Image 1 (cartoon, each protein chain N blue to C red):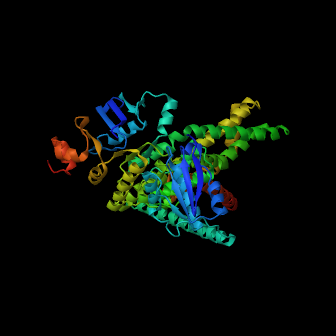
Image 2: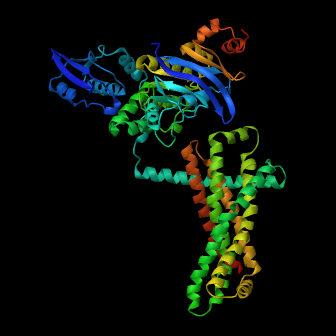
Image 3: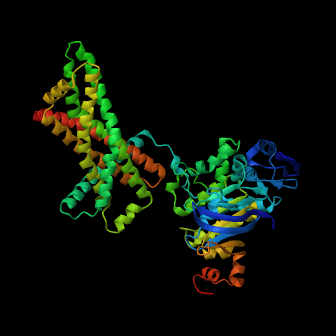
Length: 250
Length: 374
């Protein structure tokens, strides 16, 4: 299990000359539920964007298994991207397409499946997230929670090795958010995917995270990493304690 | 083994299905035919699944198993999946955990012709009502402006004036110069036959000032500014910015629509006047360059042909078109749905509505001016 899946080496993130975070070094193992945490605006989502190649590192590199993602040529990178599934914060379902078409688009582009088979796979993915029968709905016709689940179904379309979640519980009620957590764990266990989650929802962090990195906006670097529950018990840094205890000084 | 393999064995009343090899969506999902034939040939009591030599698998296997499961359920055959890997079993259980919501699938039913006619009649009626309501609300908002109770930012108005005015000059220049040029060409060919080429100046002058200046400016501004108003308000609606204004007690009509409407109302007449001049210059370019008229003669002829009433009439029309464009753009923007495709539709509708409104208004003005003898 403890095989490195994602390795981040000496990563510096910057917008132009404005440095957001520097010297990030951590490893995500196969099958981890890895949490990226930290206060608002510290660069969690930006780190996620670096991991999935939407932003380029100012310095340092990102490796998947042993392949260097940052230095990869366009073809290698594209084939690596197909092994990723990303659930964006607002779902980002294409509003002009039905749910089945949303899920079917990557399948149609990257597999040789017949339209009928694509539809079957799309139905299967929707039933995995509890949306059986909603194939022909447009995103605007279903509720926010359902949109999020449909977006997860789309993220899983190509059976990705790594699933990235940007604030999965944002805008969900506690019950839906708990169900989503369970779903994430279930998918990890049955598909063996690695999961990377950006969140500051403490309930989720402790319920499903088994590895994490803590970013600090003031020092502009990571100040802790490891299992969140162990961080709560053993980390002495007051900033980490304050975060993990909802503002009560540790 | 790289290909997905399916083989069957019979054991009394049991059909054993052996799954083998590597199942990959990229290479396709194997058909169910073989098993279907086998079951239909002699119906077993139960089907057991075995996966001893199964390699890597993904959703291809799951889809295949879902198909098999559906088929067996239809034919009342028991299916025993305890021989499958745990991950597969768990995912299949997850897929069945939430039953299909009854009624979720009925949407796609075809409507009959009377139903469709009825529905579109109702929606046309609703559309007309919304339009009238919007015009009414805009009028009230204009009333609030006159009594100085409308709440909007003057800096917004200045920005809109700039966008709808100075920034529109290049395209208005181009279009109206060319329209003047084209009118002169068309006229010149006919008038040359009578040796009356000097009347090209009358033709271009009257056509530009009375009709074409206002109309062409209107159509350019509908495509340029009306569309942008619809897109702005549409995306503000998607991001709930309009709701935010409403809950702050600021009327969106005052804050968003009024400055846009004022900007076009002020700028359209000015642009029209400008277009008239540029159009006449376009005509003069043909007259002087091609027909050997002297610039002075052309100027004097134009001056004699175009009356001040024509000019004022044209400019007045441009002001009305400005209000129509702003109303159409803002109405369609405010009516927009909450998705990116809805914003696109709103923009299209805005341009279509403004052009229809401009052309209809132009027709009405023609009749009105005729009756009034202008």
